[in-house]
Image (spheres, rainbow, N blue to C red):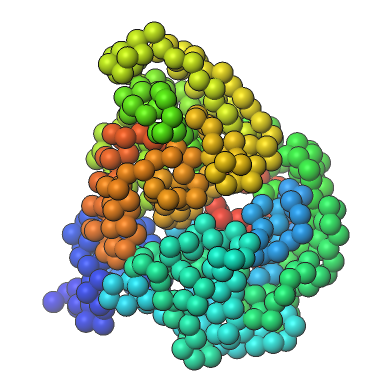
Length: 551
């Protein structure tokens, strides 16, 4: 037996049936290197171990990371936080970019969507994925000197899963993890007892869920006073509406941060941020919208990190309101869109084409054999005629003034005109559009036709549930389909890739037929930095600055 096959065979004896099914997929060529690493990391297998299996299978070896030089102050320009910073409740980029430097997650996503252990050393599911057990890292201390233990993890997730609290993470944990479901096994082991089996649960406690930073069990609020955490930086100063500074944590449990200091400057709009970067007043920006990207893309002093993302704009049609009670009308609007013009024109080629489901091309489970929906004006007109709307119809599209969305709305208005759909645009400020974000008190959730921004996720779980299942809290389409709900349940509980892929295919085909929401494109994330900046990991979740170096 060749040495590399012997290594794989020996390794397989230590793996569970679910883990071995992933190896089967790799060896049969049904799963590539990237997807194998990603899926194996979700199951809790270490990346070095997975890398050795990939290498033994003759699919390459991981590249060593180049290390930058230590020292200096890294300056970042970010959006002004929306209010008092509290990891339990915040939802805006300006807030979580700061917290990411001082507090940490159980694990974080990598550019290839694998999971890297941080405060958790390892994790594993039970046989059906209803219980996930995490082994916690020892020897970790919070900035205040307290030891990090299982009690802190239990308290953190009980806060986030409390239905009577104001946690922003309830959009992730509703129906997945209840208060009391996180249980201490010993001081360095916790078991998450889920409301329902889930095959990709570790992403829900990773940086993908930006509220899930681990706070001390004693946390009572007033986070801005301390920015308490276990992270590589600790607070030096914070001034609301102005900025914040952080210094290297000399007692950090892992590799010490390269920069001596971080300086964050707050800006109320994106244009001042870009001007500050061009003038050399800051070194890094958080992600910039597509509609202003050309300014920085053409600058000789600036590099733009382009990160493939699953972020998207959902164009919903209320299935309980005429004329959208007839799926032929919904299909007609989807068929009137020229998606190539959206990707190549609106997004300047920096996007992936959508196929009217949340399954972006970046997701491993996406069934790429499902035919891509393309513009077909003749068929769209036929569908409207069959629905009794040969002369078209009038409707108002309500959306928000953000990034490329107003441009998308105008293009959609023009596309729809070709089939006789007369669309008036109502473009609102974000606060008015979202309202209280509950049915009956939100233009987003109550409008018959609208476009909403959805941020990147490394797995499609939130996209599949919150806006599309019958009782989803973000179901702006008012779509109620028991068959769909059952398919989502099957997808979410699947532990092996084959079952995930099968359920995903069924979901994609059903949504193409029903078309409650149009997914036209998935824009890339664009992060501008000065040319002398290196070491920023190109992940869509946010800025992690501990390995950044200034050349």
